[in-house]
Length: 168
Image 1: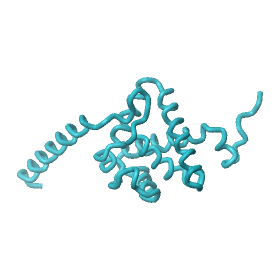
Image 2 (image 1 turned 180 degrees about the vertical axis):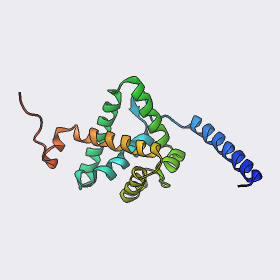
Image 3 (image 1 turned 30 degrees about the vertical axis):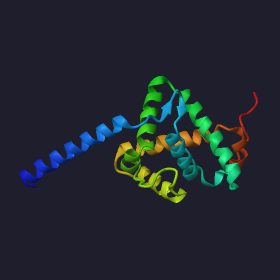
Image 4 (image 1 turned 120 degrees about the vertical axis):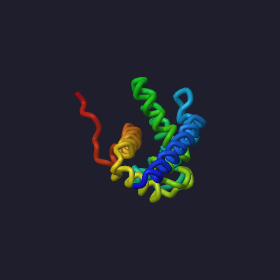
């Protein structure tokens, strides 16, 4: 690589990072007072549809109710984490729920609320298989929070053949 090209790439990268940093400073947080914001709710609902798939009810109104209950459990799970982990999760939610973060980290160009289940599923698979560990970690965090929140509800256990905890 020529020295002039290297300098140009360095300057362009620096400018891009400055713009990205300024943009992230203006992004709305993913949670306010322990409550998921609308963009965060749309993100978690889209992730739930892609991750949980056929576990969700097929009928639209039943699915809407199941997702609302799921989002409440996601909020409760995050609120139950230690403060340092909550801060990390809040950062992840803020970045992934924002358009720049959704595009850069997730690789999803359409908004969470308009993306199809297959588009979100493919974006998540690309994160899982990425060579960048930050994308893999984000994937695992989103998937694990979604699964933990959904299967914390005892009503979901029969569908997966889990009889529940044993009586002692």
